[in-house]
Length: 148
Image 1: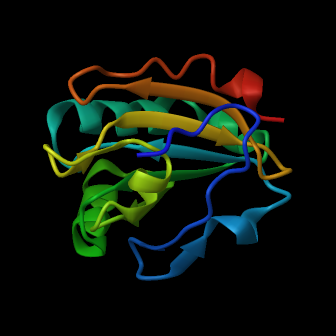
Image 2: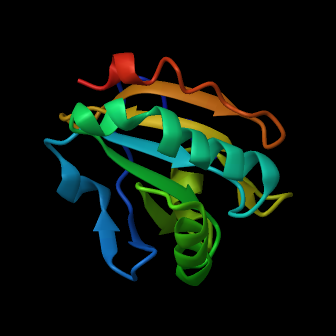
């Protein structure tokens, strides 16, 4: 499994969002993007992390960033999760783990993405990475400094 590092070109992918609209990362070039891989919607730590983004990180969007949270859940689950938790950011369905695999964060044993956040700059290159194991919540406080 490949590992994506700061300075590398962000691997491209196309996934559907909670509204069944295709989202292709390369089509967002020119906009900073925060990719937030997480294992499962509706699980304890994942819900806390997504709600923390909702409650504490409007500054990411104010700086022009597009926030894409990605899990292996279906678009139907993503839609229900977004509605229940009143999330502002986009949720993408990576049901086969293809995007997570490209970023080196797919955990085959758990059949889920590990907790990883990638800031993709306007130039399409990785500007910042957080990568934690599934049980370990992330601290997103440093992300904003890398959104340019």
